[in-house]
Every structure is written in structure tokens, then in C-alpha cells.
Image (cartoon, rainbow over all chains, first blue to last red; front, side, top):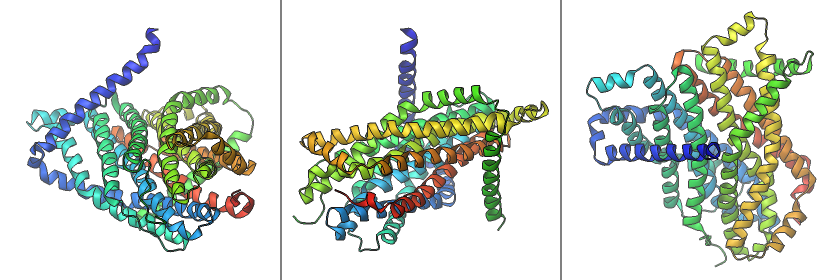
Length: 250
Length: 259
């Protein structure tokens, strides 16, 4: 019986630790203590733009293509081919772009953070920071969170553009527009925050030599994938459960 | 241009590794049976739970709720079963399976092989006359292909379960959902879905094994290898998905007719 319970207990423990860790990092950002290292935040923001933006847009573009072909066939089958634009609007704007964004955040930014901070932990650089009197949590984790908040809304907005261009290419019809961008940004930003926090946690607590860094990276990916899906579902249920809010036919 | 060149070189090396893996898998002797079974169980143990949560969430939220909203406008909510053929079987099931396998099992494989590379265990194997491709890559390649194909079936079941939940939420009797689902589902859809997933597994295995076996640069190196592996695997999977879907739809026009 004890063995059976060991695994859920371990999950709960990790969940609790991540919660506490997230609270600490959020408090650093909220209390503006992170402003002491604003330069570092800007540097991280620069790294995000140069390193991750292009690959996120690429994935969103490819998924926009998918949406386009499926949408064109689906609406044609309902006898309303000219509504393909509406389908892609729902598909791109509400579902696929935030999810694609979440996936790529987890894959590129999340694992990158784990690998980087984990390597620092293994080579005792984090302890060195503490010895020099710099709060390592503020300097490493809070700055990254702030950087992602600064940069990602813009990356995301541009990504929506990429996805729509792709759907347009695929559907070759006029793209219908449904105003729901505001909600969407909330969903994507919640995903981004979750991903950054989980990644910082796994990097910050990495142990066990070079092997440990790799293992921590893989573990963070598991959790991030599940969380991205859960956030996506909750967002959909909260914002659009039971009402399409699409301007056709009354 | 050196960056572009290294990208091309890497892609070429992955193709070469694919060739070597296939040759090593087919030519005797076949020493990889035990490792294959243990890798298969490893993937199974690691992935079942994330996959369950992901497919139910994705199919309930993204496909179920949004499509039901969309169909309510047309007053054709009983067609929800039809879109699940299109959404869950043709697209979401395989895609979510591939993402979970790449994100969960693929990263674990890269971390494992990367650690062996960094600790010079792979070199030691070669000195002992054991071929790493035959004994490490081939079993992972086969295990991931089989596991991804089988997981696809599981993802379809749970995806359709998510659709059922959405139907019930909209106060819809389940009869029309099933009737529409089975009227529209074809054998082509099913084998297309499973074939696609099996190939995703192959792509993931090659990318992740390659990245793990070429990891270098100390502690940061393994982490970086995992990072790059998962990014390359995702991009490759989605690009392949687009080509495969277009080809399948173009060569089997009968599956486009929604009844």
C-alpha cells in the first residue's frame, strides 16, 4: 500500500514545492525588487527575441496551414464553404495559436531555462552569487519572468499574424475576423508564466551532476506539456463555453 | 553563412543516422530484443498519464467546445460526431500523441544518451566492439515507433471521450454523436492516423538519439542537447504533418465527403 501511495505523494510534494517557489518569484516581481536587476531583465528579453521568436512563429505558421486545410474541408461539408474564414478564425485565434505558442514556449524557452540555470547550479555558480550578496532567485528567476512578460505579448501578437497568413494561404479565401484577441492574450500569457516558473524551479533545484541537468530538463518538459493543455482547456471553457460569439446568422 | 551550413550538416547527419539505423535493424545478428522490451515499457510508463490528461483536455476544450459553438450557429449540433472524425482521428489524436511522446519520452532518451556520451560510456562501448547504433539506437527507434502507433489508438479513445463530455455539456443526446461518428469514420482515416503516428515516432527517435549521441560541453551540454532535440522534433513533426495530411487528402478524396 505504501508503495502505491509513494508516487502520488511525491507528485503532491513537487506540486507544493513548485507552488511555494512560484509564490516567491512572483513576490520578487510584484514587489519590484527585480528592478534592481532591470538591465539583466532587458538582456534576457533580448535573448528571448533573438533566440526564440523565429522558431515560435515558424511553428504557429505551420499550424495555421493545418487549420486552413482542415477548415476549408469541414465548412465545405457543412454546405457553407464561405465560412471557412470563420472556422480558421476560431481555430487559429482561439485554440491553435495559444497552444502552439505554449508548446514552443515549453520546448524552446522552458528547456533552455532549465538547462542554463541547472548548469549554473551544478557548477556552484548559484552559491557563488549568494556569497557575493546577490539574491540568486531575484537575479536568475525573477528577471526571466519579467523579461517574458515584457517580450511575449508582442511575440504572440506577431505569431497570430503568422498563423493567419498561413491559413489564408491554405484556404485562399477571405479571412473572417472575430474579435477575441484580448481573452486570448490572457490564455497565452498564463501559459508563458507557468512555463517560465516551472522551468526556473527545475533548473534551480537541479542536482546530480551533468546527468542531473538533462534529467531535470526532461522532467520539466513533462509537467509543462500537461499544464499547457490544462490551461488551454480551462481558458476555452471559461471564455467560450457555450457561446460561439461569432457574428454570423444571428 | 556558417550557421546555415551547420544546420544543413546536422540534417544530413540525421538522415545518415536513419539509414544506418534501418540497415542495422535489418541485418543479423539481432541483439536488441531485451533492450527493445525495456525501452518500450519505459515509454509506456512515462507517457500514459501525460497523454491521458493532454488528449482529454485538448479534445474537450479545443475541438469539443469550439466546434459545438460553431455548429450551434448552423443549428447542426448533431454533427459534432462528424467533426471528431476530422478533428480527433485525423489531426488532434496523432498530433497530441507525437507532442507528448517527443516531449516526454524523446527528452528522456536524449538526456539518457547525452549523459552516456558525456561520461564517455559510448566511447567505451565502441572500444569493447559493441556498436552503439545497433545496441542503443535501433531498440529505441523500434520501441518509439511501436509505442507511438499504439498510443495513437489510446489517444483516439480518450479524445472521443472528451468529445462525449462536450456533447453532454451542450445537453445533446449521445445517439446522434455516435451515429455521425461512425457514419463518417473510414478505415482510411484510421490507418492514416496510425501510420502517421508511427512515422512521428521514427522522427522523434532519430532526432532525439542523434542529439543525445552528439552532446558535448560538460553539464550545460546535456541540457542544451535536450533543448535542441525537442525543438527540432516538434518542428519536424509539424512540417511532416502538413505534407502527410495534404498527401492523404489528395490521394484519398473519398474521405473528404462528410455524410
